[in-house]
Length: 92
Image (cartoon, rainbow, N blue to C red; front, side, top):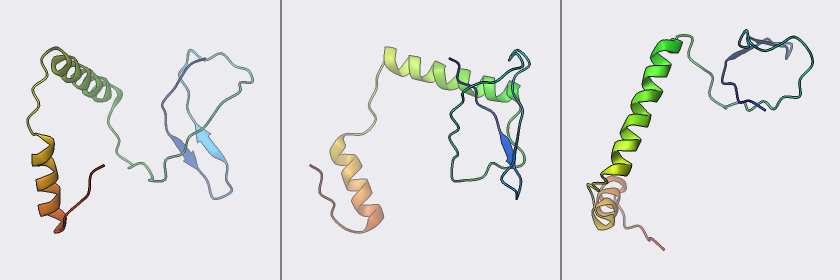
């Protein structure tokens, strides 16, 4: 099993045009499609930018894991949220 992230173009007829990586051999496959409610922008990131973006996120997550530095206490977060929405909130 393999997860592949790609884009599809859906026609008014319900048909979809889908491009898969070239290393997928021809044949029939069982697939699961998850469709996000928001449509993709016409101008998405290139694969190189996408890889660099994911690498940066991974680097930051690893740095945070190795040296966690919480910037706000829960009380500060609640206070900021209450100020933003203009009313008290209840946290369980």
